[in-house]
Length: 181
Image (cartoon, rainbow, N blue to C red):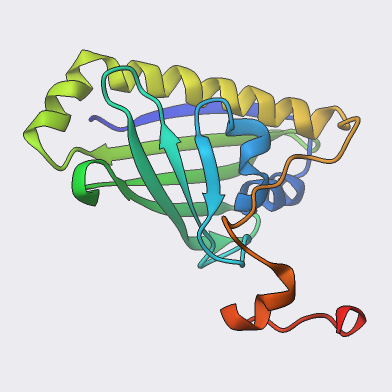
């Protein structure tokens, strides 16, 4: 699939936008309508090393995708490496570029690159995957703008790890805060 880029302008600082984008646990709050069954794959949800898995319910080309943040340069860019599809052979990348449009406005530029791993997936992409992905990605950026510009009435939905138990966190290499011991 050819890469595509979508833009959005947000009345918020680059730091606030960066904090929301680089935290995969809150990704479901603005992209949950087209990234279904969103789950973290590691207790660390923010910054380099954070990873998640989700279902892309594209018509005729439904598949699971795993994403991991591989670069995070505050407050300029976040780069995610993705893979999924049949046997995990398809590879891709999501690049979030943040630039200052004016003093109080941030421009978000999201570029999505996806390389189909099998001939079957390439055929399915020609049947409408690119257009579907572009429309859904644009809508998710609009929801991101709404979240940043209007204070939400309740806390944002946060994804968790399937089967994660906070009291057993040391098993994953994290220590418990002193108050919970």
